[in-house]
Image (tube, rainbow, N blue to C red; front, side, top):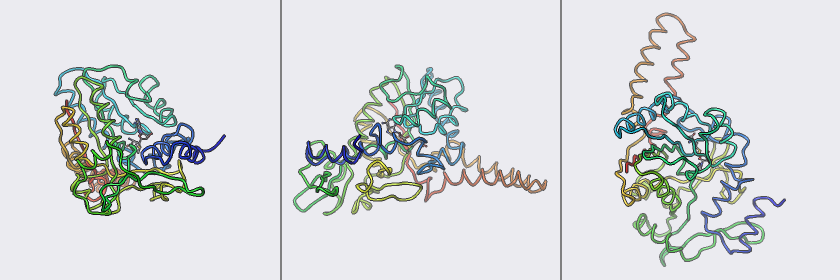
Length: 352
Ligand SMILES: C[S@@+](CC[C@H](N)C(=O)[O-])C[C@H]1O[C@@H](n2cnc3c(N)ncnc32)[C@H](O)[C@@H]1O
């Protein structure tokens, strides 16, 4: 059997240089060798390649669960709760404790993660795509660190205008080939990245737009909570000189995305202004917050205070082991609130 790299080369030889989003989709989601498909274990864990907020502390998922409970109360109807890109299930499990009795589904494209999720959530509530969910009038969707992995096209602002960077094959290595941008790529970049200087690289997040459109059209009434790294278009403009495309592996920045297809995560900073704009065009009301502010609103600073009090009580009683356990729990909660770390992630709430 030919491997992923050989299959990508064969595709370039038959179709010509590939748009970067096609290349990225093959690297991450190829059913046999994609980064997220091929792993025996989930990637988003301490033993995997990166650690996400729900893996750091169950208090993160509990706060998200309180948001979901509030949304269910606001709409007053039964509702269905869905987590997309649920990974190991750590968020779903923690969230479930706050929404007992509500039907909860996990949508996960990785077969390895689906296997794990079936173990923790039960078999019939784990599916591979939004299209497989039972229909719902009122759906509340949660997605943590999903959108940064949705494949992007790449463009560079040249003196002559925008050029699209496609992936070519020289006979011995992959390299960027410059071509005129596809019409939808040009439309996105003119709308969301007009003001970047000459030479800047922009990741065109058309896939995220399509995913959001699919999500909004999949239920009559709904809310979505999208959490990820990134910023507004204005905040990203300073990072766009060299672009934000990067790889992760084994908890560190990985090699160039061309070096070992399928062996590293490929990710970008999410353009939350573009995503919010798309939500508005789809008829949603939108709200953009920082993760630390969102978690504060849903009780995590209170959790820190009560853990501090418990630590003091345990110190007074001389139970050092229990005090250390509570301290470590408190430090984990502070980690997801840290203003220059996970707390700087963004939270986009959409309601339609
Ligand atoms: C970075 S991991 C985050 C996992 C989890 N949400 C967390 O916070 O720990 C992204 C996950 O999204 C999954 N994924 C990516 N695109 C998807 C899609 N379109 N539908 C469902 N799952 C997807 C990947 O397989 C991967 O497990």
